[in-house]
Length: 338
Ligand code: DAH
Image 1: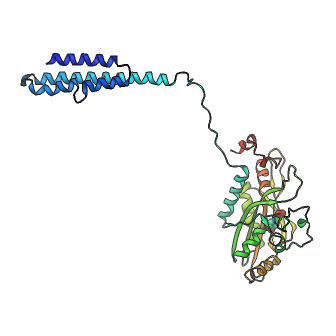
Image 2 (image 1 turned 180 degrees about the vertical axis):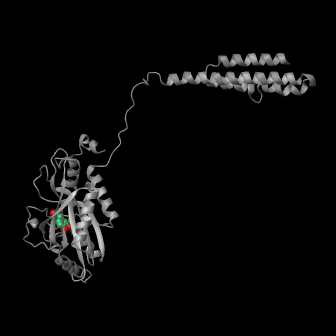
Image 3 (image 1 turned 90 degrees about the horizontal axis):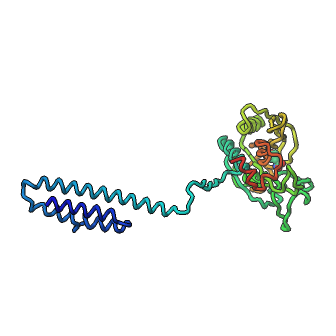
């Protein structure tokens, strides 16, 4: 009996050694260890082995099974290696891989999101309005008379219908007050359009961020505190901020805001970053007339408003000298902000 196991083992190892591919190897395995395999059948014969020989018989069975199993595994690994090598034939695995390019946010998007983030933390909600506007929302309601230069055809894009591309986001102030009642505190980022000669600091489409806060007892110190805090969050806690008297039709008093900053590669200097002021009561009156109520009673509510150029903020933050770079989508430029 033991002799037959020895010969089963020899046969099996030979078949395994000679297997040319995985298929032949599998056939060999089934032929020995399968249900009707030679070793399986020999094992079934254990019942006919005399009692005193059973132990020795079992031992040689186990030894044969172990030898055959490890031969199968080794052969399997060897065949796999040959197959792997064949699959890589002609492929130079030492060549460097192709890098996967990942995108990044545009600098304008970055500064806009940052500005929105700061103002939202201060309680301002996002508001929106159309870019194709009418004269009422862009000018009349904002106390801008018909002969104001900003309304000139040379400065503003008009459609034949009389509508226009909004020249500033201040129109969203009016739209918000038409649909909401005080107290309200909103910001409105968005595009604005002007018929400007295009150069290093002017584009015909640019980006603004508008703000409006209306409630009872909103005062000039609120305006100053809010914008000083905002600008210090944006440009650094020690940034100096100054409010310079100015004129805007829709605010009284009005200011331009400068921050003292060091643009990369230049000496520190005052740079204008925003316009602002206390909402002119004439704006509230125009809104009330449009709403046909007195929700923004100029005797009861006051407010402040501000508007800033996001392109300008980005140029200041990163020392960008030409605004056109912001719309050219040159990857060599954009990569620097990734
Ligand atoms: N709309 C002004 C502009 O485009 C900016 C501005 C100034 C907005 C003062 C305001 C403000 O809300 O109060 O130049």
